[in-house]
Length: 133
Figure 1: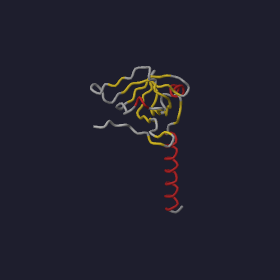
Figure 2: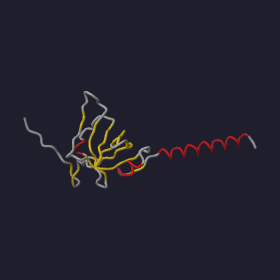
Figure 3: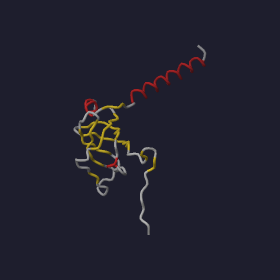
Figure 4: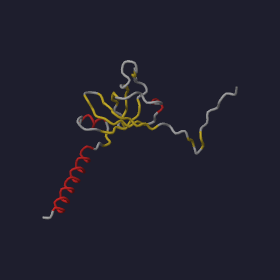
């Protein structure tokens, strides 16, 4: 074999290895049941904030820990530990996507994505009325 053929075969093998690694490391959407059945894997869990239950955020003692409860798409409620500060307008979010994995009886999230209510209603911009001085 020529050197160029050997180099091409090695490059193809490396690319195939990288693709397999990327596929196996990728996370997928799931509910709490599936996430807790596979605690070693990372999942995207979609749900809504349970506003009736306690939210704990104490930036003085630990600014990178926020605890709250989430109800997934099947109605299962679990406590969530978010290893980041509390997001702005968190209580107003319509839908939450958590990225993380299950540990013991809680879901530990490293990332959070929120869908907040739209500021547009029926094609019109909502405006705030300001008081005249």
